[in-house]
Image 1 (tube, rainbow, N blue to C red):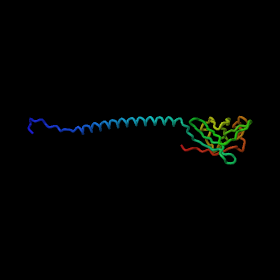
Image 2 (cartoon, one colour; image 1 turned 135 degrees about the vertical axis):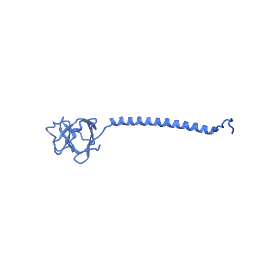
Image 3 (cartoon, helix red, strand yellow; image 1 turned 90 degrees about the horizontal axis):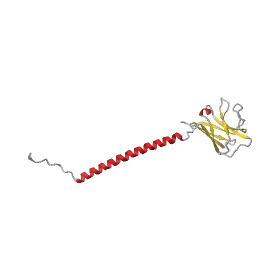
Length: 170
């Protein structure tokens, strides 16, 4: 090569140029897809966190049994909503002049009234704070005069239904 001759440029084949353009486009599409999937995942996480915040958070549960040891009532406590959910599991109903009253029973304290079951429906909610169950080991239902009795009077014994109160692990 003489100093006056222009330097020969390496020639790239059109095939390699086409392949590099296609690969660059694939990389761009892949990056856009990954960014889109990341945003969708973030949106799903936010949606699930919102659903979890409004979902009932059961902390306490009790299955109240009748005299034959058959399930009669299911009681759950949702402290977030501040309610006791009571579900009838049998067909026992109170009489026209009677009411069923729910009690928190402890070995060291007198029974505390959690409310009167006034609904004839299968499920009902009683307003209650989680502190109302503090120290209680069992829940029980007694039959009282219409409208229930004051807590100071206490329940009639024997209880119609009773069961252990279980605190769910958090």
